[in-house]
Image (cartoon, rainbow, N blue to C red):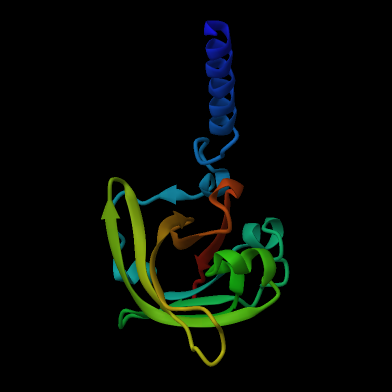
Length: 171
């Protein structure tokens, strides 16, 4: 009986260890490896402007290859607009079955900074006559690349380590 209990404990331990090490959430995700972490809360002037999906997102994230027209516009009045965004960028289920559908969204934004992480806190709103998605609050990380802001939106299952990276365009 004691041998059986020991064997069961060993089996359970092996399952727990394998489950734990197979998740990339314990291993740092490399999608932000070429981006610089902000050392303080970003100014509005740093963020305000038009953003496009960066080349890395379009090239390496499945089903984003035809998303060159996706746009994020962060405005000075505390609002934002997203146009021609693949539905899966803002919808977990849509990431797997509706990436060929582009949607628009609007909302309000503000920044925060805590424990070395800069975030864009957003209230995402949808036109209910054009999509079945419901409004929600979330946060997107803010990074810097070459003195320009990058808005980093995790997409799909976090274990897949995928993100839509919107890079601010100079005007």
